[in-house]
Amino acid sequence: MGLKVCKFGGTSMADGSTIQRGAAIVKSDAERRYVVVSAPGKRFSGDIKVTDLLYQCADALEAGEQAAFKTTFDKIRVRFLNIETELGKDIGMQAGLDRVEAEMLAGAGRDYCASRGEYFAGLIMAAVLDIPFVDATEFIRFDKDGVLDSVTFELGAQVLSQYKSAVIPGFYGLGADGKVKTFSRGGGDISGSIVARAVSATLYENWTDVSGFYACDPRIVTSPRWISELTYQELRELSYMGANVLHSESIFPVRSAGIPIRICNTFRPEDAGTYIVKRSTRDVGETVVTGVAGKKGFTSITLEKSMMNLEVGFVGKVLSVIGKYGISFEHLPSGIDTMSLVIDNEFLKDGILEVLMAEMQEAVHPDRIYAHEDIALVATVGHGMAKNVGTSARLFKALSDAHINVNMIDQGSSELNIIVGVESADCAACIQAIYNEFFN
Ligand code: ASP
Image (cartoon, rainbow, N blue to C red; front, side, top):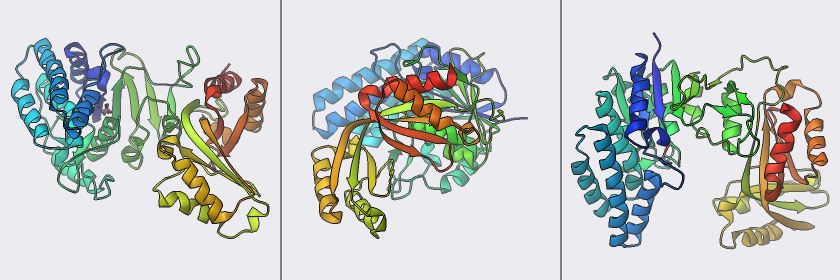
């Protein structure tokens, strides 16, 4: 008999009726034994996710604005009390909310505040399913650098083996300082993957509000092709580049154990969804490209210097400049006399770009240094590309026919992806042109 871990995202936990839907899905299959939940998400466009409200609470406390804290906390209170009423069950929300509010006011910290949406959602789902609630802090551990501690899996196996079934809140665990610590946003997907690995699941089902992955963003191309199966690597590339279905780090826990992930739609449970597997069962000749995704908000810094190829330590000196400011880079395409660094704009606020460029000038004396400040990266991803001759020729011809100027090219060494940098304004047109070339 199989063992499934189900993770329900924010839209599946948004109100009493969506929670009932999720619970019915769990109950319909005896293999679905462990359930991981997100905090209640948006119920309608314009609504605010509980996690966002919780971050607002933390902001207000940090700014010493007690009245603003109270107003926002009351909105959260109303949401959870409404869910309790809709479910017609006494889950002890009022007392729990009072206790958590007091903890927040006593200085429990930002991550603690942010984690409470999942905490309450977990208590609710456990009550509805009538199975135990197991807090994530009992086994999800972070080391002193804030990285997931590998002890988590062993501890998870020990803790969870005591329960035939359980509900675990997503998004957080325990930091090395003994305090609650959260993952990055959307990290409930990572928690689900951790639980799947800890209990040696046969399948990790991620229940969300779409029926899987599409070959590109449906907001850019109407009704793009649905993807029935992706490899872990393809998923990582596409989700990192903005395909927003699953957190890009959520494959790591399950990958080494080879546990497949299935993306399923809570609102259309009969749909097949997308399977994410170790090796593709698809014939690679059949599809050259699996998907196209793009992300805005990058800057490329280009350095040109004659005979750069002969200068020992050139790249090292440039990288030590960004390293000094704790900045990482996304791509590093280089030629004989040129190199570019592509950096997330998040790192370059408040005049840092100018500082970096001045220090690079000083460190390596390039002939020319310049930046493109508003670029988007578009990744064309697929295992089929390595086996099919002429893929890049087709891609660049499609972009030139669409009059899109490419200012950076980077091909991953595994031939799994080709990444181009274009002006942000051209991002959608670039995705569209590539999609049309390979899918229409
Ligand atoms: N609730 C958290 C967020 O909104 C985590 C999650 O939903 O996975 O980012």
